[in-house]
Structure formats: structure tokens, C-alpha cells
Length: 468
Image (cartoon, rainbow, N blue to C red):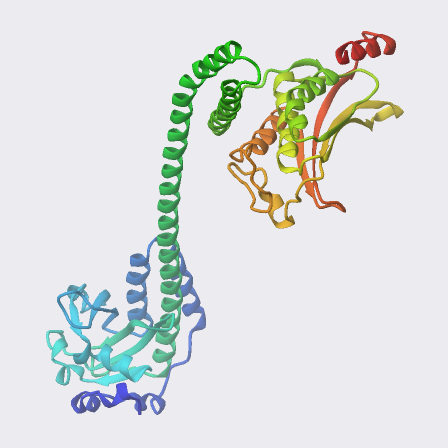
């Protein structure tokens, strides 16, 4: 006997006659009628839990030929001891809907304490909490409703007729309804828990989005505010540098100030670009441009940084003119960012290589399409760990494996590269440590056409002119 069973009052035990169910003559099961009831209950459950429970009480009374039936739910209101609420009722008990019965003075309490179905005789003589029931109760049959790891309540039927006694078939039917109710309530409980967690997650996400929005607004405002005083300071430093004798201490100090102001300007421009990317306001104006022009402008822009770090930059491009449908300025910015990253994070005196190749694709009829142009920047710098590669294009991402330098940025360069490349209908990818120490970044962009406007000789003359 369990500890729960030992706590049951002797008077309550006198009411228990569950053992008689085994010796009573039982009617034959009607599985078809039971199946119809369960289908109707399933449809009611789709409407609401309350509708399902009301139908459950009514069907329990009908199937078991009972004068009353109901669902008792174990609850503990703040101002009451552990109690059962009569949640759904049918028959003579219907007026007592949503009233409470104390756990320790109820047939439901005894049933849950026993942990199995129980049959009670004349329960009103032993349980004062149900004395108000009328007509008098002859028998009460109760089955615990299992939900999760414990009972949720009980389903019960009551007879008010001396000639109507419950049998084993009533117990089987009531147990089937209890199992259905337990499963339905477990689903409802899990659904409610899932909805609660989903709401909590949504609230947390909303809070994060709001905080992120405030952060980006602050960055955008700060960038605009900083940009205003930077321009006149740079102009003033340029004027002062022209008045100082070359090599003097003042000239050297001005040079340092100019370089630091240039760096500050780049950082502020990066912040502005980050804000524009987030709001989709980075403009890309597409037109026909020459691949060689884009490469030349990018190399020219990064040449000072290469020289300061004594890097050796090698450039390889197609020998014939290639036309792109692109924003030349933005595409130049892509290459400048990639080359600038290599210059920053490669040891002094490294070898950096920029190649541009055209990869043609065959089309119907054996002809070839203009294909794609592939820009590749390769360096001898510090490799990026393989597990970090998926995050290199995330905004403000920097890695401890790459040593910081005086020119280190804010982690905006590669996100801007990806954004601009994708605006051009292209793709960008990064590989690191592929049989070597450094990093390789590849950009693929659509080619507009192979220009036939000038001859190869004229093109070569044009390239020679640029290098003079």
C-alpha cells in the first residue's frame, strides 16, 4: 500500500466497492458507437478545449447510461487548498459547473490517491462535499485522466437509480475516454507551452531588433556628425604642410596628423557605408566600362599602402579589351577593399597577386557566351581558420588570428564587397590556408561583351600610355 493510500480516511474506504465490477454481469462492447464518439470528440477538439470537454461529459453520460457525468480538474486557487474544479458537467450535476471540491474530501481525491479507477457506493454518505447533489447518488465510477507524468484530473459518471449499476464495460468505455482526454490535454498543454516560448522568443527578438536599430541609428548619426569637422581639418593640415619646410619637425608632425586624419576619414566612411548597406541605400549605377580601367584605378589607389609595407603587387589581366556592365567606381571600390585587406594583414614584404580572367561558357550551336570575369586576390598573409570562414562577410567581424595593425578597420570591408558584388549579379568567396599560408578571395561578375571598337594594337598603346 502506498503512502497516498494510507492517508485515505477509513470512512472513505467504506464507500469503495471497485472489486464488485469483476463479478457483475457486463453488457457486450459496442466498439462502433465508441469510435463514432471519439471521432466527434476529435472534431470538437479542433474547435476548442471547452467544447471537447463539454461533449466528453455528455457522451460519457450517454455511453454509460448515467444520470450525471463530469470532468474534475485538479487545481489550487490562491485562496484555497488543493481542490478539484468541476470543469464540464452533464445531467443532474450540470448546475454545479465550475464549483470546487476539496482534494481530501472528494471521490476524485481518493481515486487519484489510489492511482487507478474506483467505484463508490452511496458516496454522499461518506463525502460531505457532494451532499448537495440531487437526486441521491447510488454509485459513482471514476477514472484518472493521465496527462504527462501525472494525473490531470478525473472523468466520472454517477447513477441516481437503484436499478442502474455500473459494470466492466462502463469502466472500459470511461477508461477509453480518459485516455483520449489525457492525450488531447497533453497536446493542448504542449501547444500552449510552445506558444508561450514562441511569444517569449519573439519578444526577445523584438528587443534585440530594437536595440540593434538604436545602435545603427547612433552609428549613422555619429558618422554624419564626425564627417562634418573632418573635411576642414584635413584641408587645414594640407595648407599648413605647404608652409612648412620639408624635413622640419613641424612638417613631420603635420605628416603624422594628415595620415591619422586620413585614417579617421576612412573609418567614418566605413561606418556610413555600413549604415547605407543596412538600409539598402548604397547606390550602384550600371553602365559599360572597361575591365582594364577598373583594375588600373584600384591598383593606383592602393599603391601607397603597398609601398609603405614594401609589398610586391603582381597584376595579371586579359591582353584584349573586356567590357563589363557595372558601376566602375563601385567595382573599383571592391578591388581596393580586397587589395587593402591583403596589404593590412600580410607581413611586410609579402607577395600579393591580383588576377582577372574571363571564363567563357558554351552555348547552343557551339558558340561561346561572353561568360564571367573572375577577379582573384591572393596574399601570403595570416590564414583565416576554416571554422571562421562562414562569418567573414558578417558586418563588424574581425578575427583574433589576424594581428591588428595601425590600419585595421572596423570589419566592414568584406560585407561591403559582398553587397556590391551581389548588386552586380555576381558572387564572392574566400579560401584560406589552401596549401599555403595566405588567403584567396575570388569575385565572379558577368561580362557584357568583348569590345571590338579598337584594335589590339590600339588597346596596347592605350595601356602603355597609362603606365607612363
